[in-house]
Image 1 (cartoon, rainbow, N blue to C red):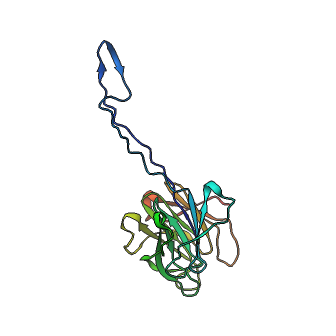
Image 2: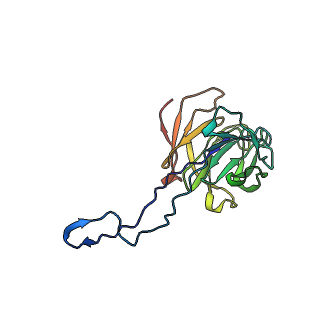
Image 3: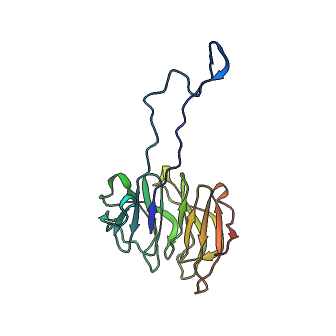
Length: 223
């Protein structure tokens, strides 16, 4: 699984419109009192993290991406065949390892990434053989995978970053069950790509609407 933070906030300054004497209709862009010192958004860490197989955590530095990724972490529990997602400050692993699967959610703290990543919560059901973590600034989603049988599932679980010790909630479903699939997304949609069954690769793309995440994902694409 992999995780990386993104930052999309913009600093806004108060700018009450006040006429300047002698210059009718002129509006200065920022009026006194000036809001200094200005608190700008905290920049996202310029790092990416790879997790598993096992309890391994490795960190990639985007500003020096030809260097060997150092070991961080580790995870508190073995994870493999699992997905991952990221908030601005933490990375989360969902489920794994192979076999009957499990429901563990483990959290990596980007500000203290040499510490052991604790298990903070559980998914609604065990899951493994999935690489489809996706999300926006508020929620992280895990879709599909195998749980707990050997067949694929269409279930989508959601965690809330602000309440990440709570059990994940089951939300909508994929249009078609998938495992060994991947996912990507923007702030509005998540896209679940490819995967199995029936024991073969396929090109199906399914779109999850974060603004209506109880609805069934819409087939898009294909690849």
